Length: 98
Image (cartoon, rainbow, N blue to C red):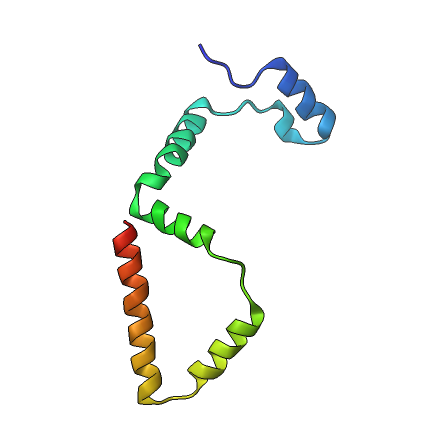
């Protein structure tokens, strides 16, 4: 039987926070098994691939966000066409990478 939570780990948990009531709880091996399986297979799902793409995006640049808000606050037909074209490109890229 594979026991993932050994005496050394119990000792470390107790020493890190002796007032933590969770120090006496053993982990649920079934829960760990399913969590591991989900994490192993997450990248094989459409949602997992989308999360991977999002994680690879650069950090937010506040000046770009402000510029986008200013542009979106005006209402005109040209803006609507530009937004439609941008959404089409995003969807095409997501579908192409999948």
